Length: 127
Image 1 (spheres, one colour):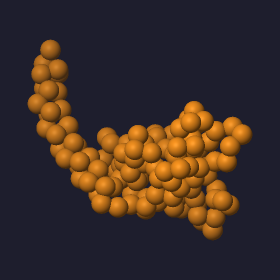
Image 2: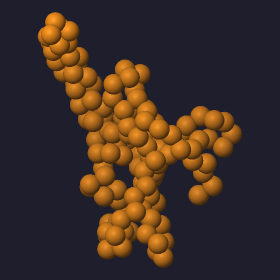
Image 3: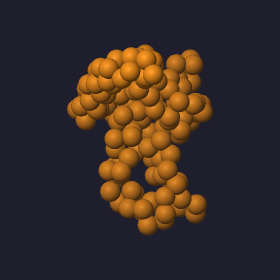
């Protein structure tokens, strides 16, 4: 696809709490700016064929892909399925309402986490 992919480790949002671990980030060939992410799976042949037939991100990975976009702020994510001896399945996923819902849920979780941490931390420090 003539895209350059860089391996990365765990990435967090600016809050430093919520994160993801993409298989790679796609960079703009004219700069080092990230333009998309990448999730790669190596399923059984029967599942790989199913992904080709359905031509969409499998439901089992939908939250992972959209959650990664929510964490990174990137507008696109590539999902790739690889199975030896078969054509790879690659699809570009764009941010949508589901991405927004996940992002909102992550924001609510962060508030919940902060409240619980604040309530529990003094108890731990006193012990």
